[in-house]
Length: 447
Image 1 (cartoon, rainbow, N blue to C red):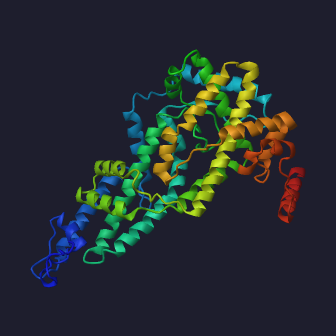
Image 2: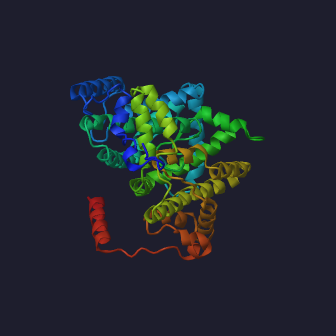
Image 3: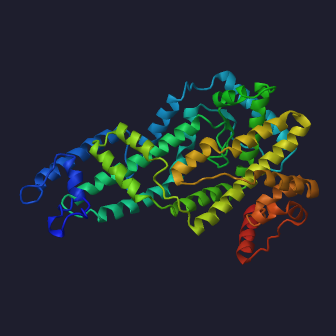
């Protein structure tokens, strides 16, 4: 309790112990001498923790190093997905339509790009399938935030030294981890109702390159478009996803680099300890049920991360936005050029996708909730123009060959001068390591 400025120092009320205030919520109060009954304290805290652990055990094991129960996270994502409307498994007819659209897309792309077809067949997914198929990637991207949470919780607990501290540590850790797990699950669940394909947001989210389309979401997307048949919408999206997945499959460094940039950004996130502390106190007083954790995670969304961005994060964000713009701009250029021959009405669909991307929407919200990242590749149109200029100047093979090495791809400054890059590109001067690696690859190829 703050001091009253109108009272003399000797008449000030005693300072309230935050730990005592917290324990009072559980009916634990100090005795006449101001000391806590340690036996009662231990018993009560152990009881609360045991009750919570029993509930969480129903979702599967908790990760020992992070305190996160990722099965609980996935369960929330699945329940959010189910709450957003019927989500039936794709019918045999829908699966066949996806395969046919992807097959035709491959025929067209064979003439347009240098990257080979995928070995995995195209599939139709429900929203629940998308959650299952992308969850391991979300888990990987969220791990740096779990580490930051552990550091923030350590700082909180160091300020609350006193009776019962050792017993409170696992409770505080479990509450914070549970709320973040709920927040991630809700974000992924909401995103599943909006995406049209496995990597619709530009990041490679699947466990391996594969074309996966969501017929129910595509049907809702197409219903808002005029003068475009459902089959054209499906074919257009199959073209985009097939091109994107071929790129990810053929360019081995691209997917890991995108993920590494997101994780690098997340490692430097600053946790808002005051918001975290308030949420933990509210959650612990609610006895830490799974349903309460889910509600607390929803309430904490948007408040967990400090808004400040470090200079290093700003640099990483610029690199990430440029690389994503290059990926999506390449897809726009490839698909747009392909459709000029086979699908004249496709340009209108390209503009719809561009407006949808510019609006941000659920994809941006999901990344912001997960890693505090407000990601919006603003220069996708510039990137598409650059790739088109390279194709017009040096051919489609030169356009695709730029992906063969990270040093060959355009930079943000190249987006300001697309014609200059189209004429000259970048040259990579091999160093000794590159030369030795090439020698090993040549020997392996010879064998």
